Length: 135
Image (tube, rainbow, N blue to C red; front, top):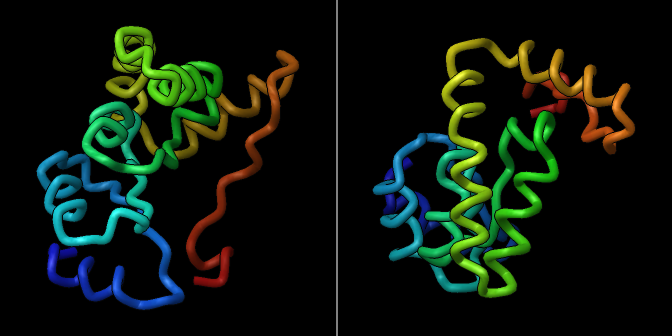
């Protein structure tokens, strides 16, 4: 989407935010520049969680949360508590997984999530296609 489109969407009362999965931090910065501060911009790429938060984004919806939920929570909680060094350490822990998962289709994430179900970690749910989700 163009920044102009994001600005138009952000002005609508029934749209409160968007997820950007482009992998481009430049896109995220442009979207933040044109949207009001209460518009929720979410990183859709795990590698951009901390940069997005630091730039004014509100959080993330990333596939790696299904595999490494503790790491993603740590990035957010450390950032929220002002421990930016701790947030950066957690973000760095995610980088190898992001590189690996980016090489494979989403079914790999679901396979990892299935494995996590047997470790006592919370179940983040099963992924759905846009068609299955009604959109």
